[in-house]
Image (cartoon, rainbow over all chains, first blue to last red; front, top):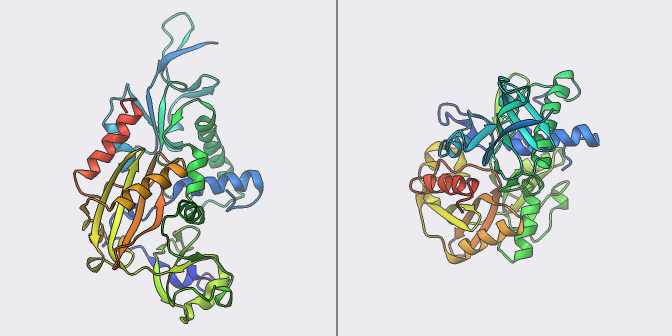
Length: 51
Length: 323
């Protein structure tokens, strides 16, 4: 599947990060804790997204 | 071999490069507060045992008894800001050796968080649960706090018929990603109508669809335990999703929130066992206050003074047992 194929709302709604307007992209929360939790789920339970 | 070292009263789990972690830790002396995340931990000597996390082993000057600069464990208080810097995982394949190494560091830090006896402002399980927006909506419903009708559905035909025609579509999962080319992409809350073509792509990934509340005022509410602060901006001055423009973030002004917001923000924090929250609320044109969502480890330093400093000082005070 090509990355540019519109197959989900991630393809339709995602916008480029505007570094000119927002020099600190972290103002869009990076949700690092959730990402970490997904990593644990991947390791222990066999699939991402479990929490 | 036994180990010695002074208990550090406070620990902030976050990167020294993280503005929020640094701001809070900076209010305390290095002898009072230590800052640690997976990257900085890898650059220090450490030992995790039943007595907690020992840090920065020092030269042996007293007969073979190890001396550590600090110990974090029972008797310490802590705040979980971030385990790792943003993008620490960028480009790492899930089943690669690099992923295994990074997961080992995360496992170590999590073992410290779960087993060291530190009293956390918000514990890890409560924090993770509260990251889920649908868990937040359920909490609001349970508490009788107004929140927009919210659904996740496989496709347009599966959406409830009583949903408002004007809706908001926003990610249930991560709100940002990096394309193969390295370009970063972000997703905001988008306004749509039920007949718009974009809903044809709903089946590809779960997204939140909810009634749109016609906001008169946006509120960013921050709680630290029983303390509540609020800042407001007129909805006419900012984009629908005010995070879209940095200038909008700077438009917030300190405000005294309606009593139902102050009360509701505190109740939902308590219900979810969150010692810290940053919450988004709106006041509609009829004056009703609606809870939109919260971040259990979110940002507040974009808010104006005196709120920004007051929140940091309240966190620091709790960490050192002064409140």
